[in-house]
Image (tube, rainbow, N blue to C red; front, side, top):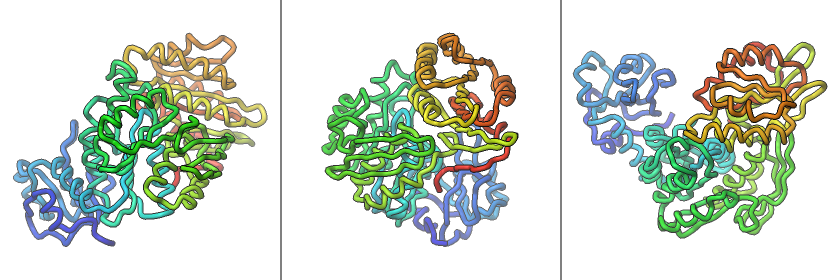
Length: 477
């Protein structure tokens, strides 16, 4: 296996001090002994609750060939024989290594932020660009003050395309991260009520997201959603940040990457789009209008980085929803089957609306029903009751037959629903789970949507544990 870093390059980049006989280099970087693979370096990062130095022995047992540790912790690690690089601060050293990775790279770099669709867009970019080159992208939602430098530090020197997700829930969080990443293309997917508890209004969220423009390389592109109500503000903020090239995607007639026609199906979507003067027709393997909107951003970014668009467009057909973000399971019940749509990873008003529309596009069989299982949307501050209640019209308009609601905030939605919609409410996940499991029948389509912190993933796990899978459709490779 080729080396990710030589030990010599690591010492130089991190301003570290070698202890013991270092290997020639490392094959990867880990901060978690549970997933560490033999030959990798273990960075003993100190977090809010855990200190990686406490897991140094476990890292050695897992096969770490090198430990990166803090000078002040070295005396406590004296019995370990594994070679080390000693640094002032492990996270700061990993950040310096990430900066060195970006400096040595010749890859086209794409950064993605937005209130919704960040991870979906990032994963779709990973999927399609793999058809045209070597891609390195953030794992899961590694989009914060340690996730971004870790992703950078892990980027191989021969990467063709680097895709980075950059998140935030407070002002001034994106700015330092994007200045490390230095993208050629910066995407803002959509401004929506997410983390609204930390901001006065959506305009403040837009301003915070616009920090991504400050890290663009000279001549780089801002890629904005032309259908977003905050497009004009984002465009101005990009100009103010010195961005010369601003492109847009969406259904708006003035969008550079424009959706011309769309046919939604239960398992996929078929789209026609206008891309910088050329028309393309594509099948998108992951269903939902919101997925297609993200795909427009993907097509725009691929075009701006010079990718082979024929190969990119073809790859969309094999795109699949990710775990917790629309992943589908067909499960046996009696002599029939039912469908589970897992949207349990996260939720805000915009993504909740999209998930309800996704459920509406699914077609129950026989006497099956469309069942929405909805949990609280967190971090919405004082506007939480109003924003939860405002979901009611979407449920009514999209022919949802039954609704199961859980959590204190969802009480506002229960009160807002018309009496003709069968709705059950529970304060706890366990109460809701029991009621739901006793309700499922053949032909049903069940969609579970909530913020991650509500624990609704337990309902997903309970269903998958009780019923056998027939045709699992997992996330894209």
